[in-house]
Image (cartoon, rainbow, N blue to C red; front, side, top):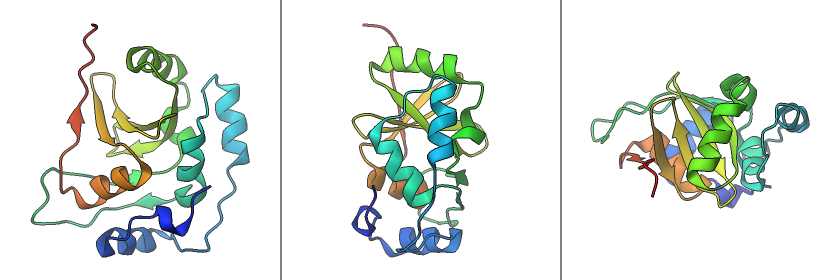
Length: 158
């Protein structure tokens, strides 16, 4: 599970998470999510548990920043809201990316946030996949600070 040390130390990131309701002693019960995700044929990878236990149920609104390199947006950590009924689409993404993915939430009203077994975090729509970071910390920092843009994942075979 996540530890306080897993949460980025950048003061803007921590303040944004605190404004959304996160605190160091927060405990979120997500057993029902696991049951329902598995019933919908999703793979539940271990790194998803960090997202669920640390930020489950929260809606995080990144602050407006003049030095932002892209327009980030609000994101909610709720896999059922984001991906119910989307298991076949996510399974296709798993095949393309070559690893199991767990939906963790929704970003900017259009992207499904996904975490892979290797901790990589992606944002997915029907038309593209974006790489957000190689870890919980990297992705959170990118989503909140918008200091470096996400990278479009090349989905062409071969």
